[in-house]
Image 1 (cartoon, rainbow, N blue to C red):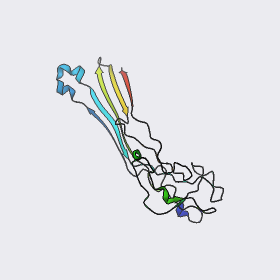
Image 2: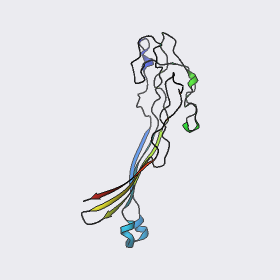
Image 3: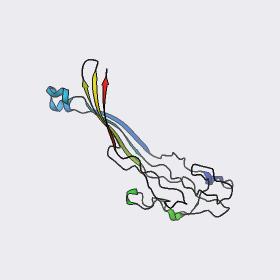
Image 4: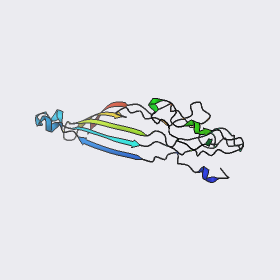
Length: 196
């Protein structure tokens, strides 16, 4: 916005205010519990994983038309650099996408006046966060001194938490403010690895 550059300031598209990631590996004490007589069956079990808890990415607000009349139709990934007008108010309404409805208060936004620039920043609030657990349970079986088998069960999004994508930020869409998609549900796979 050439007449008020401060309106062009916004959060980065990949801004993530909080991002907690922990990786872990724990050898299960089955061998101690069942005794050494069952060591081949009970030993070598390991559970490991990566847990990530984050806040969401910014919601990209746009008005993909050229109501500003400056030929502004090819800027940005939404196809336009125009933004709508924004009236101050409580922006986040119902932040649990499972309940449906708008994620944010769409009534605070309106189309920019013809020949004028909207005052909404393109990114000024965040979408839904993430609660993801990728886990592996594995069993190592030593065959000889230099060879072993590893059996693995791998689970991505192990607890099947819904990881919602951002709501639609285009004021011209009928789904403006709604969340209509999510990342993958739980995925599991089995593998056998031969080490030599």
